[in-house]
Length: 339
Image 1: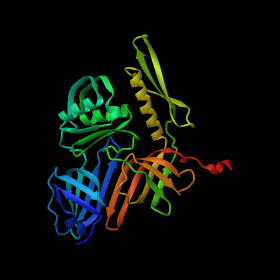
Image 2: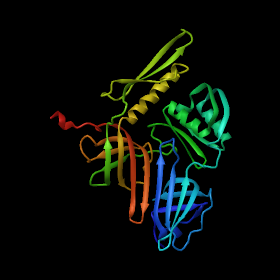
Image 3: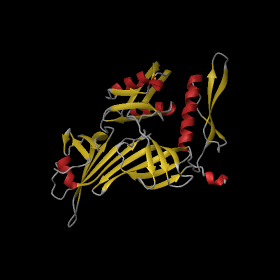
């Protein structure tokens, strides 16, 4: 029996042995929140050997024993023509596009924790498994409303406001702390080292970019006891920036204002530079994972965070492409200038 480095299940049926001689490519695209994970399986379909999958069938895949995707089939596309080969492309989405996660809700919450809010809204959306970072989940909000907002949008909004990342995959939702050592799916992260002469294939990196950058993050809030407006400031780790980012909407209290500036700080540090790095296939690569570029050149080498990961497995091999942001450490610095 032919050994394959991957496993594919549709509706919990292992189809790997059938797929192996027909595989053209398996592409898994993972995001750090705000977008759904996706999978695309392209097969040589000259004899129509694969049973046409039903819409909504469960789709799971592993590479070298590591689960890299689970979701539901959203499209099966047959392609061919006179004198041409035939292919079958099966696409799957981490979020059930026919489910209730994107359905608008009319709800409000009084003096409830973020964890309680997400679990209640998730239950209404048919998402029964909701995992929330302990620190973020314990925050109590005096009032929160879903005025025609979906569960998915609510999770993304709360994550953005409190420095987290939100995702839904195969009916399971998770809100984890950004740069907290876990992926949006709750999995522990490992550092990805991309080293010239070892596993680095190519790179395209701008450790600093010509976009708005900030030295401080500022947030207003109203002190009811003293009957006056106050401000909270947080320093951003970008010594070359001079501007201050000021939120347009006031916070309800000092604690909320502090959380908002910390979230704005994280976003500013994240967006100041980035690019793409392609390496030999690494099944452990996940969004939010720390990435270290080594041996490219001084100034580009340094530490980054993965904002997106694409695993691409074909007949000729396995590679992983990393979208990276949040340059730090030596990134953007060339010590030779001092000499």
